[in-house]
Amino acid sequence: MGWSFRKSIKVAPGIRINLSKSGISTSIGGKGFTYNTRGRVTASIPGTGIRFTHSLKSAKRTSLPVSSVLTGSRNLDSDVSERLSKREQATRDFVEKVQTRTATALVDYFISHGVYVCAEDLSEAVTLEDHQDFLQSLSREFQTTTDAIRLAVDIGSISLAEKEKAMRAVYEIEKHCSEHQGQQVQLSEAASALRSAVRGYPTTPSLVSPFIVGLVGAFITYAVNVGAGLGLTLLALFYGGVNASKYLRARDAALAAFEKADQRFDSLLTAEVTPRPVLHAGSDNVKPKAFGFAGIILVAALVGVVTHVSHSIPTVTDNAAPATLTATGSSKSQAPSIGSSPTASGFAWMVGKYPYDVVNDRRFRAAFRGVSRADWKKIAERLTVVNEAGIQSKQGFLVGEGCKAHECNSEKATFAINESTGKGVLIMMETSGDTPVFATFSWKDLSVGQTPLADWKQQQLADVLPQAHSTQTEAATTVSAAPTFPTSFDCAKAHSDAEHLICGDAELAADDIELARIYTQAKAAVTDQVAFRDRTRAQWNYREKTCHDRECLARWYADQKIALTEIANKGTMGQ
Image 1 (cartoon, rainbow, N blue to C red):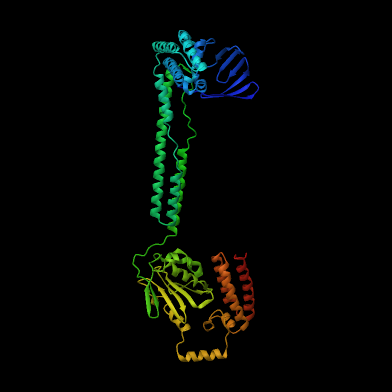
Image 2 (image 1 turned 90 degrees about the horizontal axis):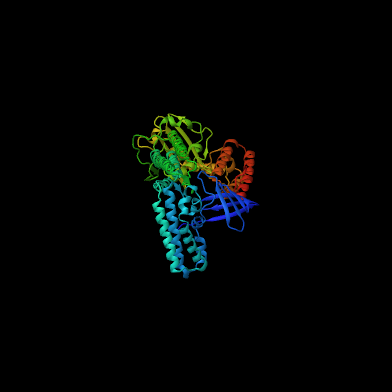
């Protein structure tokens, strides 16, 4: 059983838009005369049911079709569905059977004569002039089936005699249609092949997933590992290429099959009442998109490789011994190595720079063996305050030193890197109570004694620990002669002009204690700890290098208290 749909919308006087299963058309005109954009002109006498239809299409249509055939070929399903009740289901089934078998016989007849038509368009096919003689011979049978259907629709039931009469008419229609089959019986197969070719057109693949995976692989190449990143990138390219190639082959095959089916359909066609199946293929940009995505991924991977290699750290062939933490009477092993030592050519950029500028650089950190993350954090804090010269070249080593802000006498760090081998030694000093603890990080074939740092630890011990009772007595005498005031640091370990002045001045000592308190508040409140640390380092270095008199220190403390108070209140760094 076929189905039909038709909706007419008035858009202006005399102009209507028609919507149906076969498409959209426009009718122009009023009662008595209309023109349809599908090439059909209709003239009628309103109220009488008399009309004249002429088609402007290539197939010739009669101006006076057999009325019984024209009526019998129409689909009355919608009326039957609306007007028959459930109790009349048997009658409805009979009506559907009559309609279906009649429409099937006519469709087979027309297709065998090269007329492509579906059941819902039979009312147009029966107007073809070449088939009027055959259809006129069946006018009585069409009238019989039409009367039976209308009777069932109007009264909801039909007698057995009428059913038998209608079925004999159906048998006669099927017999005549079968006997008058044409030579184009293969048109139905050609139409089926055309529909299969349309349905066989492949779906456009999505290349976004392999594109994203390829970009992830390029990022891994740059940030983590070249081998893993390139492997993932190549896998994404392979997967996307296979999908694109598979689609392009399927598309070409579908287009070839459609073209072949369409040519065969044309060779068998004499009139096209129902539009043939068409291929609705939009703009196909799979191939340029695949090449574009592949190009972007390859460029990103190449950039990742170049960037990774330019910042890579060559490995050292020999094995380094685990670093040890050296203290008075104790030692313990450290965490595994962060990286291998670079060659000497990678350290020319460090000369003249401050240690705090290079402490977190991957190339600098790789020069030392066995430093854990926690130790690096401590080392970075102890390279906050440095001397003005920065990193210098001494005896074939790059040497640098620094201390922790406000704790320069007790918390220090120093390092020396061999310019020829790229291996380094690092010493970190921590003071707990009155006893300093030194953590030494070195390579198996490079000891502290081979570097300019050989006397550094002894010098620090000499500065911190009294060497003899006479030294203690002398220090006590000095203290008695020059009294000191409480400060935020240990005045016994003062080493700069500024610290000596602060320890001997009560007002400056009080300012120092107050500034230390404000500093603690500001550090806890500020959101950008990196910028705060850089500011602290810069201001501390300024005081140590510039202030050699009381007036300079007084101004410095006043400025810093104002600035740190504002930071503590706002939680942000001032511009």
